[in-house]
Length: 548
Image (cartoon, rainbow, N blue to C red):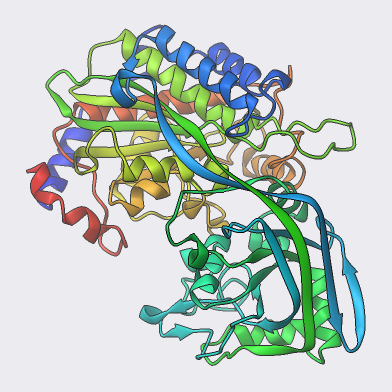
């Protein structure tokens, strides 16, 4: 209801919950560290969905939620919700080559390119498919932008840039400056080029606009890929998709008589039109192993005392990337300690303290979601098949990547969501003597890379909360250095692991803050809302009468 904003401010600005008021002895840093240590241990094999590590992960989370004192919140009185997915993985050797100017260059999968497919086929075979540069690959009528200009991409492989046209421009243009839009995400580019009828897509990897290095692309790309079962999968996915190294792209453009940087600048204007990369063609052949699997969301429930039909969700994704190629130490397990055993630990600890205290007025759901790393699949499935009505879900507080390095003065949310929850998080942080920091890296597009986005698309007010950068010891400079080192070395890599030096003190402070925010929303009779200018405001408004 639009009239609920003043009520929301009055209700949520009531007496702040102090850390000393949290039931169950408060948020326990040792508990948080223990959960991360177990979930990120070798025994859990990197928590890959539909693998042996999932069985251990789900069993552990269910056991801990039982111990916490909440009830089963899944399907038919169980702790879980089945999430059916299609799994596809390259099987055997990938043979790929680039031919231009009468010369053939053999491409190494994982080094020069990363190739995969979600098309419902058991083999991909492209022979001499012409290469076409399509700029940023965007069709956005509301921004007066169309990179395709009617080009026929049938039988061709599109070479496309990552991120948005504004990322490297001197001033903001049609795409909100350096704050990436959904059009800048690699997922959108794959989807749009399938709509355009391309035979394949190669995204040019550049570390800054992608917000991660080639090692992350390689690790993700040689793992299985997942999708929901689709009747239109043959048209929804191109036969081939993947990434190419920037150096390969620069060389390719040069051999085609083009300058890569100059073509990129041309692509940053609305006048851009696709250009053939000389006589360059791509050939690629590989087998695809496809099967249908069932993975699981884990859900605990604490019924509301007076309005049990209204819901507040705490969520975090439990999955990581399983077992991959060994690093320089010989470790092949991508443990996913920071990303995102920290979030799961927070959800479990929140369930414990809420269950130990007075019953909230609204129902609380404590979710550990599957397959986030595979495209927000678990969250998307829940949003399409909710166990509690979305129109009466007041808020989703998703938790990602809390810091192992001790306390910060601030706390942050991901992206700029134009949602009242951001203001509420700021107010609660300040009441606890801390600061709220907007996402310091809007160009990375984290708003579209976390599970809250699946709920937002369905209209539910949602944010992802993570660690800030302003360290109590070291300030912003120290926090940024630690963050940059993590993304350069450990993001989706084996070194994202728990160590004895792990300091969960900062995590405990962040989770205590999230307890306060969730308690206020759960005890309020008002509804968080999308603010003017949000693309999700109209979706939420369609169910407004359900909340009157």
